[in-house]
Amino acid sequence: MTRLTTLLALFLVTLNPPSAVQAAGPVSANCNVVVEYVYGDALVEEYIKDFVVQQGVAYEDDFSTTTRTKVFSAILTKEAGKAVVNIDYFNDVGVFVAIGFNTRLTLRGTGNPESTSGSHTTYISSGVTPTSVGGNHETHYTLVCTRG
Image 1 (cartoon, rainbow, N blue to C red):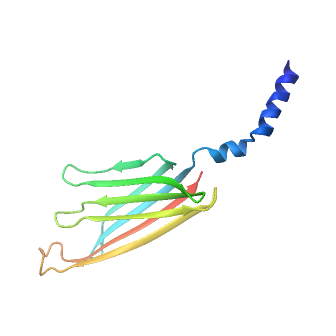
Image 2: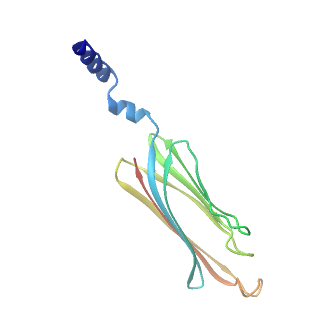
Image 3: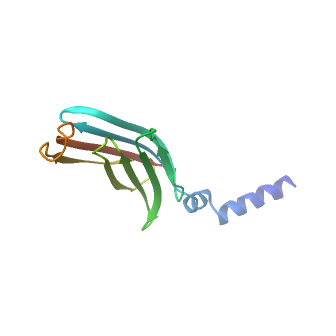
């Protein structure tokens, strides 16, 4: 009976090898995101998060306070056979200022980290708004992911 079970197992593995099963299953990625909000020359707020995102399963981190909406979300999709991580970030940093952005990162292979980064600067005239919000507002981000 043991020999028959072994032959049957070998036959099933030959028909459906583990790599084919793994490739057909959901894809995941281990990621890290860093977002910095700078006003003037001072770092006002920093968001750092390690997270795992799986294909088709939305990841969300609601880090809101009682007075400010702050949300980070991510989802992994497959496009043309490649895993793509899409992120959205929104942070109501003050009474007159909110920051938000989205980006995407294509993961080309398994086990190799891929990254994307960017920044955005807005200048608000202190003649139009209260002087407490006038000046340069910068948002910098880096997203690093490794396909699992």
